Amino acid sequence: MLSTLHHPPRSLSRFLPSKSKTRSFHTKPILSSSHPIIEQPHASSTSPPQSQILSIRHSLLSRHVTATQLAESYLTRLKLTEPQLNSFLHLSNNVLKEAQAIDEKIQRNEDVGPLAGVLVGVKDNICTVDMPSTAGSKVLENYCPPFDATAVKRVKELGGIVVGKTNLDEFGMGSTTEASAFQVTANPWDVSRVPGGSSGGSAAAVSARQCVVSLGSDTGGSVRQPASFCGVVGLKPTYGRVSRFGLMAYASSLDVIGCFGSSVADAGILLNAVSGHDRLDATSSKQEVPDFTSQFVSATLLESKPLKGLRVGIIRETLDNGVDTGVKSAILGAVSHLEELGCTLSEVSLPSFSLGLPAYYILASSESSSNLSRYDGVRYGNQVVADELNALYEDSRAKGFGSEVKMRILMGTYALSAGYYDAYYKRAQQVRTLIQKSFKAALDENDILISPAAPSAAYKIGEKKNDPLAMYAGDIMTVNVNLAGLPALVLPCGFVEGGPAGLPIGLQMIGAAFDEEKLLKVGHIFEQTLQDCRFVPPLVADGFAQ
Image (cartoon, rainbow, N blue to C red; front, side, top):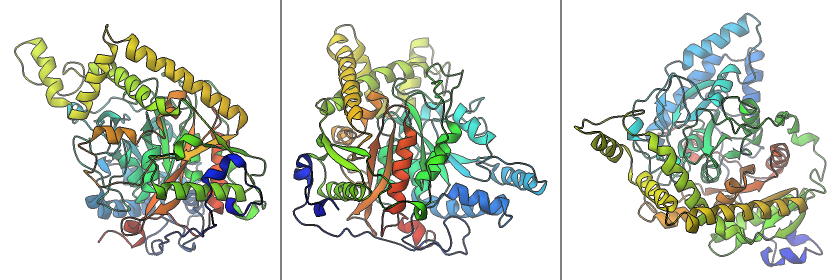
């Protein structure tokens, strides 16, 4: 623990507690073995998370279970928990059919992909050819794309089964999933609280084990903040690592497709599947994709100081005023754990950090006002009856868009207008450059940077719905990473009081561009060595919804 060091670094002294305190974690038993595969049936309630993807593959190839049995198990759980959670907007009718096809391949001793039999949730702003893709908006209600997004196509090619489309804030604009035009998703840890957003449905589905892994999108923290709120692993890759083809654009220079899993290994395996250059996306990088799975070593094979020499920078500005005391304590506990693993810790200041939030909202709103102009009732989506073309545009957009989307379009249009472009949009781009430079300087001196993923744990549904500025302020920990185009990993590191079993807190690890491999290695070791905790929500641990 940091508090047991003989000479703690001077720069960290203000973060350290005066006395060492033992961290306590809530633990819950996993489902009984009568409900197969969802977790390791004989694992201790405090054993580290294991890869469900690898477990499923081993079970299928050893003929211990069939893909059909697995699919039925997950669908049963989904059916029982969905009325409380509302994680999904659409469910596939082909899950059992695709599972049976995998079973037939195995029976014929044919090769099956690394995601064979793995049920994958897909955020509803990512196009799927066999299900509606609405982006959580009335303007695209019942819209069915004629193609799969590249990420979805790659998942299917590797044997993954898309179980359904998950709920989100409309067009990804929100931090609670309350801005969906169709339903509000609940947090599996406490159904009276939000799951985060905008990828709240994808995070809740993985947390409640309704699917094995899921895809989300991250424009300003929409994968990482829900991962923190729901106690799962969320991975935002470097901008350009994963093709954006088929992702409905919100802010094109910030949008990325990210991954959710119940373990670091599962998030890494999913990233491995969807990464790589795509000629259909001009921003897709040609950078070589390493085998992320090579970083995952069993806890029993780790040395006593497996991260010895790793330089970790704690971002000073993320532990200042505005961060809940419980969140700060959980993060300091994680810092202590990293020190135990051999990391060299230092405090890092990013002077432009506080400027990221206003710059992000100016840039994201400006890009969205341009991107969403295509939804005019003619080219895409629902159309109202009108006698005149302008009236058709106006009425289709007025009835199709929700209030949050309208507000951001107006903000962006204002920032891009002739009289204010230099004062707002141009200055925000200059701030973005400063942020990129400050992150580069910090990562030249450190291997990774760490911070909370959010300044608080999950809050009550409706608590911030009428206070958009308070909701926007919750993105302060994440938006800078998008502005810099860097990868970041969020994984659960502790709990705070709240709900029936405590509320999870996420630790954010930030790496250099295209260095997801290092983040996954560090995250996996952190996860496998964290003692006395099990991030399984009561909805699952108590046996299924009542």
